[in-house]
Image 1: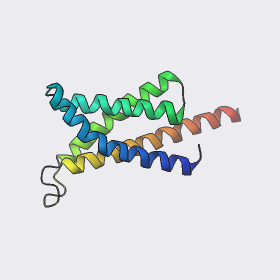
Image 2: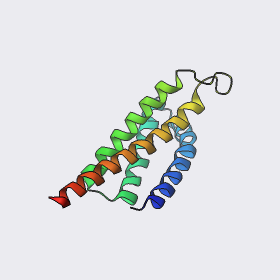
Image 3: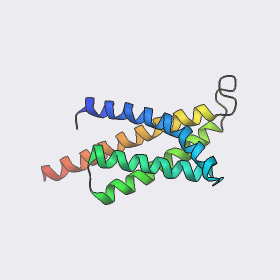
Image 4: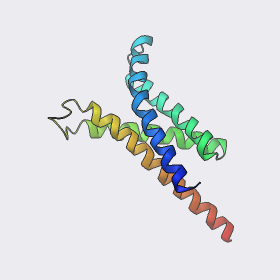
Length: 127
C-alpha cells in the first residue's frame, strides 16, 4: 500500500476513533452495562477489524488477532497515560488525553504491524 493511502486511512481512522469514543460511552450508558472499558475495548476491536479487512486485506486470522491485540494494548496504555495527569490545567480528568492517546497509539501500532508484515513478505520473496 502506498504511503499516501496509508496516511489518509490513518487520518480517517483517527476521526473515526475520535467520534466513536463518545458514541461507545453513550452506548454503554444506554445498555446499562456499566463496564465502559469493556464496551470501548469491544468497539475499538470492531473498528480495528473493519480497518484490517477493508484496508490491509491480510489473512482472516492475522486480521482478527492484530485487531484485538492492538485495540486492547492501545486502550490499556491510553488509560495509563490518562491517569498520569500530564495536562492538569487543560484536561483535569485525563479523558481527552486518553482519547487522543488511544487513537494515536492505535495508528502507531498499525503502522508497526504493517512494517513488520511488509518486511516479512519481502524477506520471503528474496529467498
